[in-house]
Image (cartoon, rainbow, N blue to C red):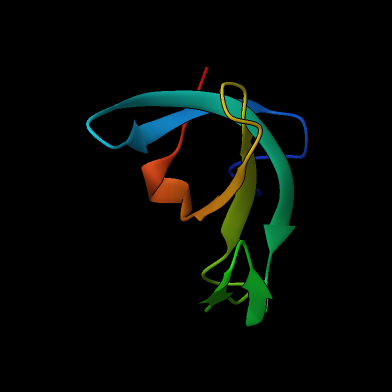
Length: 68
């Protein structure tokens, strides 16, 4: 079962505060994303999220995200 799906509203810690945004996609293989190399697999996925405030994308592990 996926922890998050595209379109889910989530929050995460960002620079000492909470950021809120939307899940854009799930990453399940090593790739370049958001300006860095992302190590991911089907057993250890990561998620691309877009911040509501800045509009920028970031990549986070499921443990760093909370559903809103």
